[in-house]
Picture (cartoon, rainbow, N blue to C red):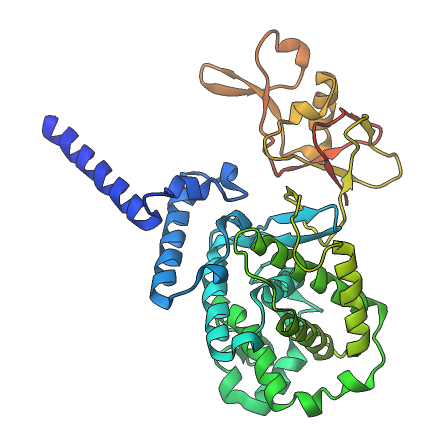
Length: 420
């Protein structure tokens, strides 16, 4: 028995040493994981998988000599396994825009490809912030995303006609990234290929055919409303990423190279879908307007409110801190996004209101319960609970439907309420 205990102790010590060798003596794996936006939702299996992801990432830093300013801060990441498409958004009510936390299973690829492109092209390489903004806008970091009636595929949402054009012009280059099946549909060869694609697509296309194929950039005086909204979204999100990165890596933004890459990827995306590009003068105007909204140039301190929300679907409503908030009876569906550090009960004045809310048919995945003999007993009637402590299975990040007319208690901080 004593030998067995000694063996268990030895295994534990080896595990701790291995754990520390990966993350260093000053930052344990646990402290790294605790910085992930969805740490509170991770189980033991997730944590073990994240350690493997983080190990590969830190080894890549050393192997590829990736400098700090090309590393995505762990504070801007969310844990995700390889078979998940879930994502988390960071919404800034001051700028009325949001970006996605970078899924941990994609972080290493983004870092390596951004650094490789910079080594090859220097300041002319597409900015990491621009690529992240574009791929989050296109696919919400979902590698299996399919749009435009199945015409656009993957993280960058490569349009089929663009894929056909690229194969016609230079099949040897682009066959490394995607292929066509017997039905003529295009498919990326891997997730890594999706991430590498824009880092090659932008400079390659501009290099060999930009002046001719895309001469329309100089001809057109503008584009449709949808193209302008798309451009504004990419500009805002890329600047937001730059702003967030600057909080951890204080390196000034190269505005010349940044603007050139930004404008290029916006117009190339528009033209790949058969839409007119935006004239450079108008694009400059759009950029100036967005910067004016940021009030103090490209980089400023952010006081961001984060929540789990598909930021491009609907803008959150921010409830006042000074008064109770009544859910409108306007025929729309309203959802409360449970914030980090908050419990469901803290949003309501009355336990009966909590019961009515959680019992609504649109909240069928949620329930109230109490513990008895180490088992959860679901609550269907508050009167039968007695003096027992009641809990809910609602966690931070969950979306809870709030029936019309319900009163939300005056919050300690802003509430994000989504209109569906």
